[in-house]
Image (tube, rainbow, N blue to C red; front, side, top):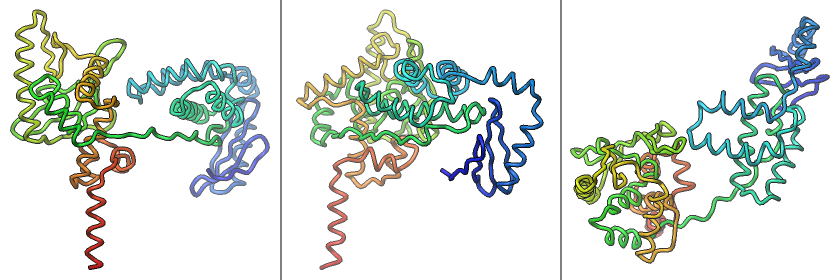
Length: 372
């Protein structure tokens, strides 16, 4: 962050090739930008002199807003349109459970870096997980940045508070032998296609449960990932994907195409035997054709692992498994990133490729040839 020189009740600092002055005058935040620091100060002071006394008095009476008033209103009315539904729900939980009980009575201008740092430390004492603490800081930073832009505070205090350290849990993708055992054991069953799309294609749970038959291109052996299934207000609904890069075409192995065609026959039989079938066009519906519950999907996954004698793992670990299997067979990081729908290949490399020794052995062999 640019260094700031204190200027009375405000600050002057460089922004690009210009200088910006921010001062507080009887509850009103005044800003001015100019080519020089002295000029920006002069303009800001002139603005303060031209403000009618009545406006200053009115602003002084109204300016004080505590966090319990500002945060819910900002999150619901201003920030919610920019969020995925699941992210909004997570932020509301952080707001309700952690932030407002501890900081809600503070006025915005009272939220100093020290107060924010003590709040994060208190969350740790209360046993809140590191990831939730990190997300609470992110939410506070976004909200107070908006308050700064609205000139309710001079600057966002969260900028001066160190981001809590968060160490990702150790992830162990399934070994190739385990993948083969699962696919062999469940061949010809409802779970066969589900396992293929999880372990070989790396689909997220919402993407797999939101897949429709119309998304499959049998002529090209591919599927289009354009929607995901989520729970909104207790209802399972199809919603847009989170990012542009999540929209993608995945080309399927011949064996996966064969399994999907067998799965289509199974769904047809399920439809014929159901007295209350509702045709949603989903590849993985429930027994009556409606969207399957994510909890049921999780239970099915763990039942498969248990049946094959594989230690319990998260369903999301299947996605890590797909990435690692592709990498172990020489598929490039950028290609894997596109297949998984990541926003950047750096995410794929850092988080989704594990214990893939074959490319490393190959690299060592290539270097060895230089020495022979």
